[in-house]
Length: 183
Ligand SMILES: Cc1cc2nc3c(=O)[nH]c(=O)nc-3n(C[C@H](O)[C@H](O)[C@H](O)COP(=O)(O)O)c2cc1C
Image (cartoon, rainbow, N blue to C red):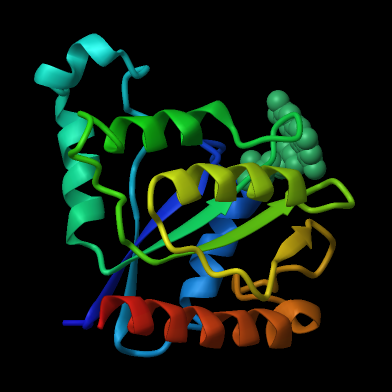
């Protein structure tokens, strides 16, 4: 079994999501002692603080998957210059009840792809703000603001030639970040 399990949170529910494709592709650039599992967030109820005492099954599942992971990877779309509501909903769920957050201390990386020219930069900045509050140490560099363009992925679904070197470097830094914090 891989030594480092990474819980991957994709900030898009769309079946043909570029971000989901990126999450699939980046996992193939990881070292053999890393394994990546995309957590499901589409079936979570809308967060309601009244439910903290009896969380729904999908909420318990999400928190269990986050707690079991040695690291986190957020791969998110940008909606209206921020993170999509589905992602914020998942983050809020796993942060509660107060004092029982699943996120605290888990090292994280952030990636994002969008059709816009600034490639999720605003969403990522908002996400960093949230994760700082949740005590999640987040890899600062390299930043990865990726624009969805022809050739971003090849026919096999791997990262295309133009972005491969950059994302391989990103993965090396992410690997070191996770190992440093998980030690
Ligand atoms: C509600 C909504 C808001 C959006 N806002 C932004 C935005 O602020 N910046 C941006 O670059 N793209 C924006 N887009 C376009 C997304 O980049 C595009 O839909 C992208 O494919 C979403 O990621 P996904 O492919 O992983 O679903 C928006 C799309 C939607 C549906």
